Length: 296
Image (cartoon, rainbow, N blue to C red; front, top):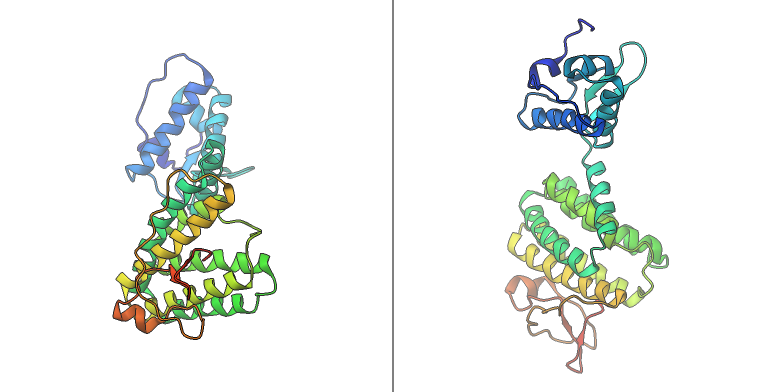
């Protein structure tokens, strides 16, 4: 066994393995490494060891040790270097890897659009609130640039859809809460269409109006207003996604619409009315008194 320092030897318990299936022994090694990480006995960059070192420490075959290392690598816990001076080390961490893995599992589980959008609503509303509290000048400039890019993509529905997802993700990133960002990345993999068949210029303009108003609330640090705005916005997205899939798990209960003056038939929300508290919903009342739900 190599004399190179190996934090694993001190970090992991001297567990005695009893004869059993190779897969079970391998799982115990993986469990030990995971427990050591959570206990802060191992940190990114620490050596986990080579196949020979792990096999010697646990009294198992190299096949078992190799299987454990492969599992740790697949989980994103270990980085493996081959050749002289190689071996496994604790990975630096890649939250996006977790996000993609979770998205795959949600899809395989058959989670429907209503469940996904309910979770997304909770995440995005909180993210918008935190964004209004934590946004820097650079953050605001980035959000403004995404809106401008979307304005220029009105003749390209696929690009506009991509920029819409980017804006929502950017709001989460402006919250400066990495846990919210990772969760939203995962849900967007499942919920956000690459092509939106119901997207037209009217809907695009409405989305842009909402995004501009949300940015205005973030910029003036109206955290409560930004949270309400995003909550209403994602409610509308939820309604459209569920409708497109043709199966609503339960009825959408819209926010109560406030009064909104119709100026020469124009349908838009004003930041001033939002700040006065006269309009708390993205339900836009048309001139004939009907409600337009085709927001997003």
